[in-house]
Amino acid sequence: MPERKPKFYVTTPIYYVNDVPHLGHAYTTIAADVIARFKRLAGYDVLFLTGTDEHGLKIQRAAEAAGKTPQEFVDEMVPIWKNLWRRLNISYDSFIRTSSETHKKAVLKLYQKLFSNGDIYKGFYEGYYCVACEAFYSIGDLKNGNCPIHNQPVEWLKEESYFFKLSKYQNRLLEFYEKNPNFIQPSFRKNEIINRVKNGLKDISISRARVKWGIPLPHNKKHVVYVWLDALTNYISAIGYGENSVEFKKWWPADLHLIGKDILWFHAVIWPSILMSAGIEPPKQIFAHGWWTVEGEKMSKTRGNVIDPNKIINKYGSDAFRYFILREMPFGQDGDFSELALNRRYNSDLVNGLGNLTKRIFTLVEKYFNNKIPEPKKVERIDNDLISKVDCFKEINSYMNNLEFSRALERIWDAMAFCDKYINETEPWKLYKEGKIERLSTVTYNLLEALREISLLLNPFLPDTSKKIQEALNTQNQTFKDLYWGKLTPGLTIKSMEGVLFSKIKMP
Ligand code: MSP
Image (cartoon, rainbow, N blue to C red; front, side, top):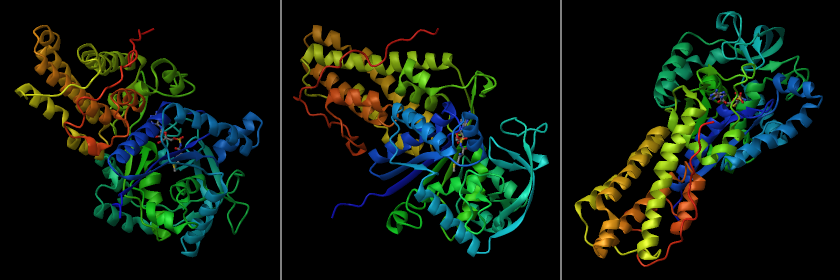
């Protein structure tokens, strides 16, 4: 019997399709993709879910403005999002749309559960609403009368509504956080949430009477399910909740919901309470990353500084974009985006770093060994230093388990810097001139072997670049099990690397 792989279920938020994707959306999705790819190479059976949030007032209004029905409108928007994910090499396994029939069925099933459990009651909602967040606010939450997240005017709502008894779950939530200290990450955000929950929870409105574009309540068709209850259900509707118990059992609980800090309350408080009410285990971890500003300013349409990932890909390529956003700011913190910073990192880390090193190594084996992998001979001290510098999987794995992408990348670049140093110190061109072919063989072999491991470690981050190196080395299809020194077979022929991996780009 083959060994059963452990499972790993990772999700992104599902994105509102009222508009086209920007830097922030790409950020969460790229991070999730890197984790999914990393876990696959580490031997996990991975389910990577993303999708689109298609109901609610925001979409309804965007469709009206475009002169389309909401369904026509979302059907036209979804391919724009999928196209960006294709260009960014996002390896999702499943894509959920909230306007799909399977999703709607799951929402109604979950709603019915909460209802039969006595956790839903009819009431009257009075308060503020931010359409951009699709969220309810009390006056104390507002900043200068505006939404604290979007800094836009909020709308006053006064309508009949169904409520979910969130207040009932306060103690169970606090116990759950206590027993599962890693549930909310990073920990500084966890403390914020725990303090707010300790201050008391108010029941939440979970239906909208004036919104037409949504899932009608089974017992009162004048209301639709509040878009956040609808949206959160995606994490279970996509894996067969209420339909396919084998799939559901296999994947649930999710191992990781990756989200941005603005939607942590929904994921860390409302979502587990709903699941508890329905008798379903909460997910294992919610990780809230920080936000990007652009040259010091909040990204917004009115400021006209929204970063379109497609434009960056056109100029720098998908791998460079993926690299930059994960390397530039520690995951969890806020950070600033500027083309200048991207350009600098691109030229220094990718062109001069990875690109140059790769070229240097392939040139050695082509020039001195006619592309045949040479046989390593006597090991010297500097060889051992190189071997131990490249042997970093344990460290990288632990960074990745904490979602410290930038540290993981830094560590891989350390290994590359050592390779450069190794070349400078062993001086292969001199070895050749002096006829020290045995030593030259060892040095070249070691560099090829180091590059093999580095390209494998880079695979989740820079899939296109890694593939190019691996194809030349003939090492595609390797997994992290192959991260041991000496896997390359001497005597085999490798291919030449055509051209360069990255070419210098001048700042405009
Ligand atoms: N539809 C909801 C999520 C429902 S999940 C059950 C939603 N969608 S969204 O399209 O508005 O945003 C999705 C993600 O983009 C969020 O995680 C948010 O944090 C992220 N970002 C939006 N702007 C951002 C930045 N400027 N920087 C980083 N991420 C940001 O919310």
